[in-house]
Image 1 (tube, rainbow, N blue to C red):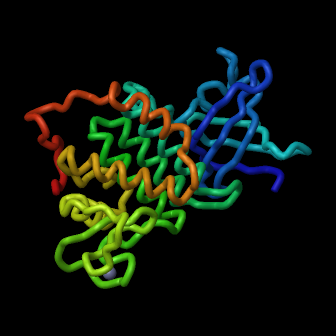
Image 2 (image 1 turned 120 degrees about the vertical axis):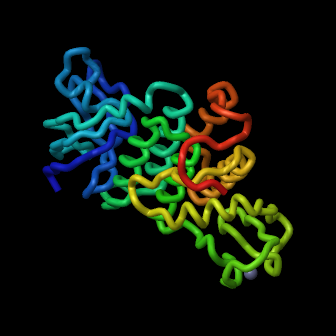
Length: 267
Ligand SMILES: [Zn+2]
């Protein structure tokens, strides 16, 4: 492949040479691409805006002798500016970008990953609660990588979901009381309910439509994070950053304390 024209979402942008940038892109039809964008760090560079992290752009890339591709043309489609308005949203978007990077190989087409990232950045930039959007999108990315458990049956014996108690097994997912072993953690009924309802919502506009109580989100957040780390074998950078800043970045809840806000289903 020497020339690619595709829609891309920018996962990372790093300084390279004097005014150039090293980009990590996720393209719609060609998967993950590392590329150089010349002059993309200068204030007036024609590639500067379209190569900002989290931006969506239509790009043309060329591969010469180097293993890296070079961006030859870029037309900005969306900066996803709404995601940048607070650390809470930016941090979640960066975690999804890192997860997509960790879960895919270069030039391995995965349109579902592209679609999930684009839909998630739009939703994270809206007024929707970012927590369920992030959790839902992370499970979709894990699903695109073939790692998502089935949430309606025991992941050890395959028995369909019946009655509690249920447990969460690291790296595997929900298991029933009959298959429970030491090391499994009790699974809050609300958390299992959220996972099952979330899993049934597959449209791009439905990311984060299923709401839960903050205590349930806290459990779901930890489980999704541990699941990803179990499968990729390390803690991605954006997750380490989140651990450090999340306690300070937390937005004040609107409405009555602990009450989920906005429309949608609540578990
Ligand atoms: Zn079982």
